[in-house]
Amino acid sequence: MKALNTKPKAPMPGAQTGPDDEQLRLRIHGDASLPTLIYLPGLHGDWTIIGGFRHALAGRVRFVEFTYPRTLDWSLDDYAAAIEAALAQNGITTGWLLGESYGSQIVWPLVARGKFPAQGVILAGGFVKHPLRGTVRLAEKLAGKIPLAVVVWLLFSYAKIARYRFRRSPKTLENIDEFIARRTELDRRAAQHRLHLIAENDPRETAMETRLPIYGLSGLLDPVVPCSPVRRWLMKNCPALREYKIIRSADHNVLGTASKESAEQILKWIC
Image 1 (tube, rainbow, N blue to C red):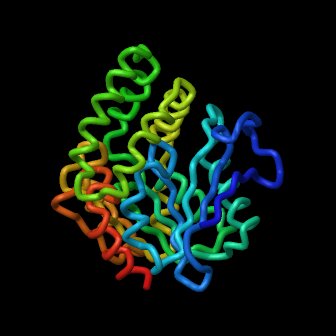
Image 2: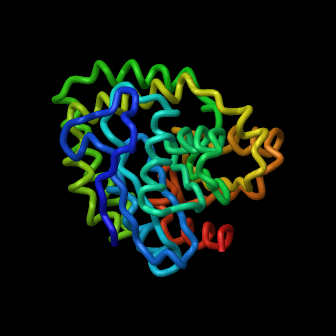
């Protein structure tokens, strides 16, 4: 495994210059001779709950994963430019883009910019334009008003629930404490900013025009990004869509709650 803290070669608009957890971070697992899968995490912004999925892929892909900076002013295009620079600095010249939820919103500017020659796109609980944009705007407002005491209570409650949700994925469970520890006040504000980016983003033109193969993967029990309207829009408007798979036992975090099933399905698509 290769672990690096990575900054873009040129200063980014709004770039963070603080400690490591405010910088874009990259880790590489696996040999360069294997197919490359590039994981862009969801709203939480890090690799702390992807352990089970990573373990299921071990030895079969080169798995590249990111943790986002806790920036409050990067645009989605800034995220894409920083990721392009980090991949180039580490000699990663092509690969499959795996966008989990919010991470799918970074995938589309990466595709539109055309500077990283991706082999294809996989959406995991991901989307093009969010099907419930009003709900996202409400979540953004609420995220800015939640008192710290409530946040702490929610995190401890999540820890208890997570141990049940990820009971079939011990590798994910190993990182739950780290996931909780990373949920700081700055992290909450960064997540609120990411919600704003989702609410404002409409990459439908990019999705309709791209010739890269696109695959979709969702859990059936997903109130965050309902799979039905996402799948329906892609099938109707996106000629590059090859397949959309719904895993009945999974929820929004399909890569975590159905790690083995997700890994096997993605391997069929990229290998």
